[in-house]
Amino acid sequence: MLAMTEETFGPIIPVMKVKDDGEAIQRMNDSHFGLTASIWTKDTEKGHELANDVEAGTVFVNRADFPAADLAWVGWKDSGKGQTLSIFGFEQFSRLKSYHIKNYPKA
Image (cartoon, rainbow, N blue to C red; front, side, top):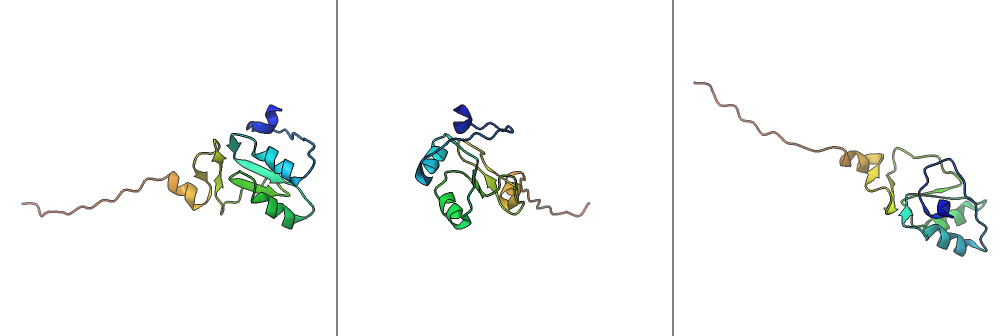
């Protein structure tokens, strides 16, 4: 399904049956994109462990709706160039400039 490998940015929830966690991670990573992923489990420790293997810049465990302002929201692969939110995002939206001015007395 294209919905499993493309960035849809829509209110859809594609579901696919897999035989085990390994196949689930393999299928999650089988995409050119890697903006956000979500793992749902009753074992949050296992969810955190699986999140380490997911090729995405933002990985949620047991949620998919909470971009925290203190964490960068960043994509991997062909997703989400740059970072938003957090100090990393603010730095990308600003350009520093220094002014060094010396006044000379008027004659």
